[in-house]
Length: 105
Image 1: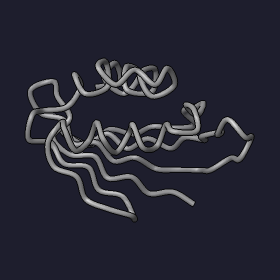
Image 2 (image 1 turned 90 degrees about the vertical axis):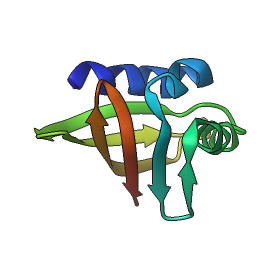
Image 3 (image 1 turned 180 degrees about the vertical axis):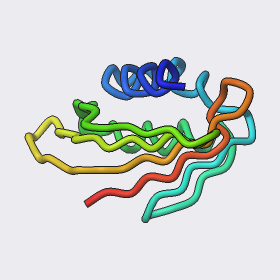
């Protein structure tokens, strides 16, 4: 499962929407404080909007696995230098992200 998270971080850092959405199941969900997205089309739109100012740099600080759950703590730095700390909770089944919950401050 760590390989999937590494691929996710790499795709986010490169703003590669095709590589990113390939990691999600067709009916996957993404939840974050500003919305809920279902399916790879809505998830792709979320990331496209997120990247309007350019991609941010994500650095994994820690990660834990518990069954199908992968919990990742990371630091994200925007193109303007703003830093946020986040925790992403991935549920992975059959090698694809089924759900992703994003928490950040």
